[in-house]
Amino acid sequence: MRLSIVFSFPAILLIVFLVSASGCAKKEEPKPLAPASLSETETEGKILVEHMCVACHSLERVSSRNETREKWEKIIKEMQGKKPGFISEADAEKMLEYLSTVQGK
Ligand code: HEC
Image (cartoon, rainbow, N blue to C red; front, side, top):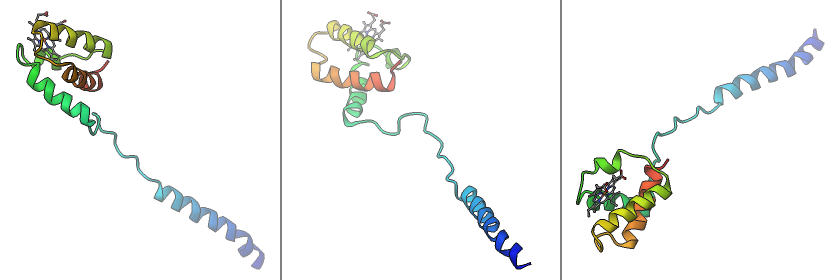
């Protein structure tokens, strides 16, 4: 009788361990769909896109597509060429950061 109590003790410990381990398992947080936050440069780029890229056409033309970084670079260069001096190199760089991150491919 005494012996069985001694032997069952590790078994009880094991059960307690298993129950508490599964009970305490952390539930995974659902992942947000979009990046939670933009870098400072990307935020500036977003504001620039929303203000400068609508000077000649709607934002739809920009926001409706996802492109590689190389393609965005090409598009922005093209748009700079449409009105020389309007979009500075510094602004183009920030807009490229934003577009290739948020509307990348
Ligand atoms: C100075 C005027 C002007 C500005 C500023 C401008 N665009 Fe454009 N954009 C145009 C014109 C005109 C067209 C249509 C003719 C064409 O496709 O070449 C166009 C077309 C486009 C297209 C479709 C072209 C294609 O290859 O399918 C995209 C994408 C685009 N613009 C993105 C942008 C972005 C991004 C910016 C801001 C960085 C911007 N545009 C700023 C004049 C401008």
